[in-house]
Length: 204
Ligand SMILES: C[S@@+](CC[C@H](N)C(=O)[O-])C[C@H]1O[C@@H](n2cnc3c(N)ncnc32)[C@H](O)[C@@H]1O
Image (tube, rainbow, N blue to C red; front, side):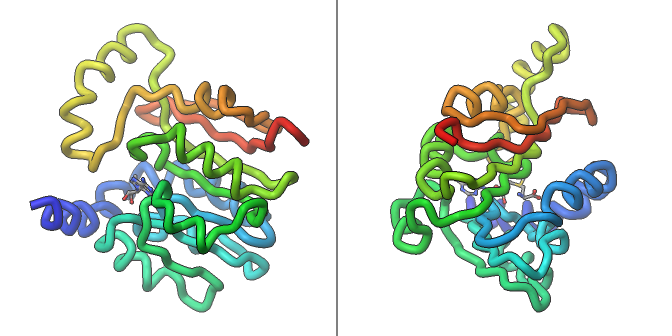
């Protein structure tokens, strides 16, 4: 049953996201186009980020859903993108991604879904080089009282139709609690409240 659900989710994901994606396309372009070195694309989904990576990066695209990963294959084109069918919190990933090895980690629309975002952020801290960057484009809980309440109420239903996506996570706060410092950050609303930011690690 879960397999069928993931297939259907992957099949319709890009069409469902078309109008939302048109509004954040420039954000993706600006945040990702300048990256260099080794980059982890966390929960790479159908490969929406791939077209924005330049030729100077080696990308590790980590995605636990096989149907999503399969859909992303045709977006790899001739770029240096390695597709890895893993949960980002799978211990086996540590034999591929070594400590202090990544120049950047890209987290777009994914910390809302990862079942243990705290552990994921701990892993990010291990994998990033001391001067590495965490690039974030995430939807977060609304700061408006009634909208926030509405998101809380519909969250159990949304989670079921959205492959585990949560509308009410305070992902921005969690990232900062975990010791990341924002070097650039902004908030805007596109139906949901969006947090766009670049972070470095506190010990820099
Ligand atoms: C809403 S999609 C976003 C995909 C892509 N990052 C983007 O910006 O279009 C969320 C993705 O996160 C993946 N995901 C969920 N839990 C994950 C985990 N524990 N580790 C890595 N990816 C995960 C899902 O399978 C899904 O493909």
